[in-house]
Image (tube, rainbow, N blue to C red; front, top):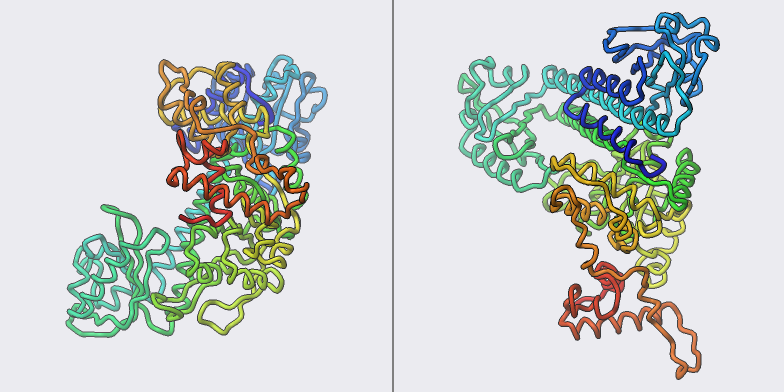
Length: 640
């Protein structure tokens, strides 16, 4: 979206989502073209999928004068659709379309006079289909109609991309199923009571039984006493692990007893998925020589499915970056400039400004977009585990390393890695990150083997890294390596009317989610939103809007929180630091100013008994937002 919506346009957008929210696939497109035709007042509307092999278009839905025409495949040559696909741009012909395209066999039967079409592009910029309308009357060049048409096109493009991603997930699951049935290792799925839920042919062979004899039996019936105790212990350990890390190499051996009471020793892995009643465990029993390769394939396919699922979620949020302020357009221009290169990017900005969205946009528009964007929050991982998370570890590398682990940099090979909160990276690990940047190589924890990777690094921070370098918290050489192409994401308070545009988008989503009908923002409410300083930026704005919708009465949004918030617009703490004339106009260094600032904060914290927010809190006395004070306490390493 490039500007604020008017009421007519907002109603049109609302009709898109209300008319199609419960539908997907064919049902979605049928309702979609009908709504499009009605919104623009045209006789004909259709959506297609582009078939590049034979350069034809296949209709996903074709609506004409109240009826749908199914399964049309037509050649583009000599049609206005060919111009749309070839130029990858919107084409609007307000009248005389037949004179411009006399070889199009469909124009005359449809009694068409005017035409408008727009392509669908995937993340790599390739055409995957298009949307078009025709009418028997002139179609003037009206800004409202063009704007509504673009919104419809964005929504239809998102659904088509979602379907394609869903198809890839289905293929990945089919590959996983084929692997499950064909692997030489025994793969057994257990329910929460450890009863056998599924077992592959190799597993049946190991147990010397058919699936009918094994299903619904407890796995404990096929284990000796020691192995039963070991399995119960491991299951409990798995249940305590966070999602994404619920897998273990079974230490030692399992002694398995088949249906004929013959015993054999097996090495195994166990993993857990789901929670509560939907909890399952996967036990893989394997020959030691085949274990490594089979596990690698299974984990690779699981990761592929997870990343494709993330892609669907990302595509669904097709309108997540909103705004047309000059400061945001500058950011987009910088993204366009750097995306096609392999240069390291450092994204700067306050918390909640959308730095991850910018990183995602850089990756999507890069030559690496077909590979994953691996995201790591450097502040969310304990310092003792960061090296293992980054570079992986060997089995037995440290206490608790019961199996080999692949690190994030290996997962990002030939793709991109997003290092969020890079300013929180411990100083002892910064040299190893520098080596990856310089030489593209590292050693997993507990290994002497050097691994090489080809990774594009995108880092982000809300800290002043130059200051961190000065006080010794960040390596200067690493800073220069990261600061190749800096992009500063503007705070929300500096984005002008973008605040209203984003707020209206959040209102629409929150109202849809809660089922409430809300009235448009009043001028007073808009003024309140514009005056507020938004120390938490877009994240805070979304929370405020969610609360306003939830607590709305008779459709009137409740934005009273803005008038009572602990917020003081536009004031920076350093503005309160003055050097008095009694110091003979002495010029202070940055470190001296920080020392004064640190002492002053400690004094006010002690005075307030370390109460930070609220009336008579330290932030209130200092005249700054509590979020700003918390940030300064952290950056100055002030501890109680």
